[in-house]
Image 1 (tube, rainbow, N blue to C red):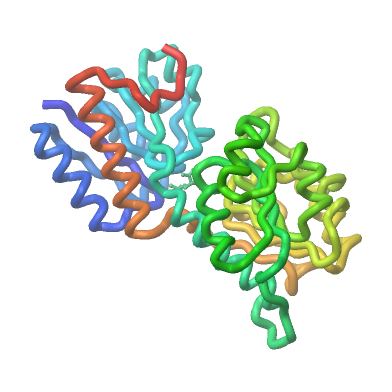
Image 2: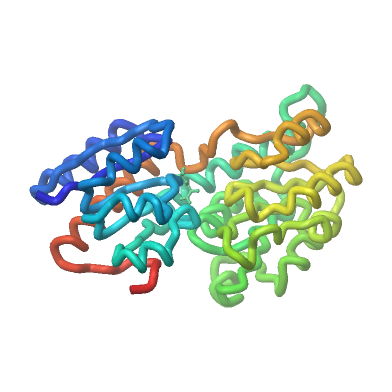
Length: 308
Ligand code: 3PG
């Protein structure tokens, strides 16, 4: 009987685990659960006899793959798969998938949770600003970016987007203004929401230069990845611009310094919370379980992200 391991340092909601359990039981497969583990050794032990693995931001590297001789597939229940060593997975003959779009609405809603908090000066009792009529820049128009645009329309915002891989006609088709570069987006919009993945090209790309281009009253929202920020550049821009706010769902390495020096205009969630809703957990968790069953039973490799 094929064994599916769900290994989540940050667990799914119990209702999502029940849904995953049902999909796996219906397929006559076995579910094994490793939640809230604190030590990599626990993961290495748990993958020993796993045929398939469901993870979230959990790291799957060479050591994990080497400890899992039966492993055939890893599904990252979520969008970003920068936590999986794709080349090592390919070398071990393991298929890697993600579940694109399944948690996008949850992340998009958190963008506005952070944004309203920023516009109201972190609820410090002073007079804030409204979103209506303000220019919002969406950096990368993927599943989350599109949901952010949809919600922003309800707030009456003027919406701009830049995406190196999405055509202007697709963006404009949603009633969003497409701009030609990240520079133009930061120059145009005092509010920018980041939705780029962490890749070799994007790491450190949100730098002092881009931050210094932003109009007065700037707010940067990061629900993407901490690695896309050039932290020395962010610290410099925060020091130079008393109007700049940085609100993030991914705690920066320089969190302590940012919190101490810029307490009135810096905020980080203690743990990445964007996808941490029952709905997103159900959507992504069950999609992951279904993709695994379809792969193991029918060989379906839709959503594969690594080379064969
Ligand atoms: C994603 O890439 O899907 C999000 O960053 C959510 O990550 P999480 O599953 O660790 O909350």
